[in-house]
Image (cartoon, rainbow, N blue to C red):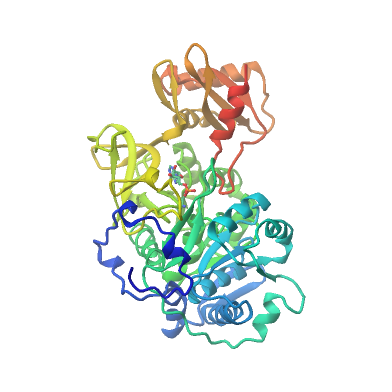
Length: 541
Ligand code: 3UK
């Protein structure tokens, strides 16, 4: 094994065997990096060194901090980690908090000190925390004091977790009190490009969470691909977004990317559609990062706000329905940028610029990435066929000590679990998660296609379509529908929706069963849990 700066070599010891890694491709000039590089230095210290220290980096409801102020705080936290907590390079540090300036500071401090970030979402409960702490063998945590209860119960079950420091509290040993005693200088650990800096746990819907390991180089590579070639970010840009920093979609969009380009970001703990619209107006936001559902919800309220500062609106996490694209364009004047990313790949790898958008398609491979469609045996399919999406580029899947590595990486390709079609013009069209394809009376139907049709109906707020077990047909198409306020949940509505779908897509794809719900089950990252609905679906007579 080559040199590592890590004193604690847990991460390197638990990488998958080299022959199970995806092939990594560095064929564009943007992703050439030296052997020694620390991503925190590249994204933060360098701006200050280059005279950009007075430029704002983070805004929130209590004000703005500059790059120089952020660096000062990061350096202080790094000393708390090394001196007070006694941590060494390679140790994993669990971070627990809602999106905030402090969470951003913590992220960079851990990276700068050569340690490994394990950011967790505020809503995680004891059980989920236990899984993460055990899997990552995490012996230190820094948490918002307000979120201590679940962390303390998790700690009782995890003897490995020995040190916890809290922020947002007044006590004498709080993080803030400790920071105040430290110097504003800290020498970064001289990490290697392939030292792990982040273990991001997947938001999967089944099984134990998988930890995906990402290197300092990977953090820079995602900054130098999608936001450069597709989004064209600049130092004037101001970002905001709904995904948590613990979700790599949010980490990139509202922390790493704006900082790579010297821009700034608005970090607020809670974002409802109204609060986000108000923030776009107040902070003169140029870039938004969110999920399709959230754009849909904002569309209905947008007319009350001045959104004229907006330049780019990025959607990811789930397929972007054409109807949502249209609604948001009508509400804001912006043609959205859809992009598919994955925790395993760290960020977005297929997308398209506004001018190249084909509504309904995700786009073409982001420069630096390659993609193709494979059949079940792993052979490349000719264009025009639905098959398994496979991708490779400068980043890729490396699960922390996990047998499931072989399910995701096949012959050097990252196989994402999505069914896609590649058309004659090189555009990739999402069909469904491979698990979400419904087999009904001999037909293959993609749930999202039926959802898209239903969502065009004016009574529908949102919906999810799954296969429900059926003796005669194997599966039938079942829709769970959330109606807009005031719409009647009756048989007439069911009939109207069914007839409507038959008009929009091939009649055999209409939902034979429709159930009305108040809301749809979603994962912590806002993804529809079709899996949970399938279970309910099967219990139905
Ligand atoms: C689905 C999409 C269609 C797809 C993510 C941007 O979502 C992210 O990561 P996850 O690990 O989930 C990955 C899976 O989500 N998906 C994501 N985006 C799209 N399907 N169209 C899309 N635009 O099934 C994929 O395999 O939670 C997204 C950046 C970073 C991320 N981690």
